[in-house]
Image (cartoon, rainbow, N blue to C red; front, side, top):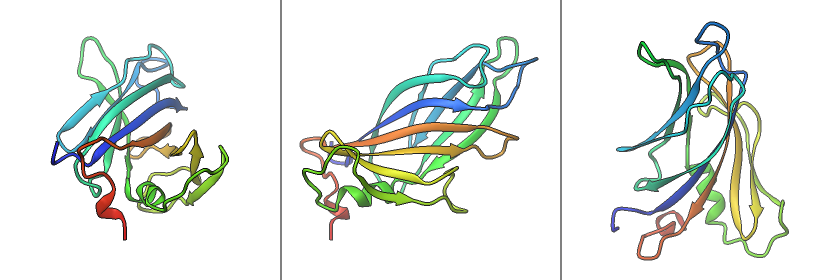
Length: 170
């Protein structure tokens, strides 16, 4: 537990206009990597606008390690086809958590993160106060593919006995 700083709930909500990799559609799933961890969503058959609504729990050991997301098309007789990828940088979101905010009204926007050349944001992403915590909602534009976006959300979870966000606080 000493090496774990905390947990991150990553909610993979849906894909938008994903690339066609089979005859007229795709069977997409998402693979999430951070450090040595690798998690994946279920496969959604014949759908270029899939809704996963899955929550994956990641152990965070280093705030500087990005989360890599890769979407694949599940194939039966050949290897799975890549349908694009995206990266989530944790630092902008984590900076919101160390502001020391308390008792804000639900839905209050704490920070807005603009798309740039480094992040994969398709549009402005908001860090929002919800039920006593801050979540970041985002739409990621997939790279290395002709089209597609991925809608997801993240939420930090402190774990008793772990360092938590202490090394980020001034």
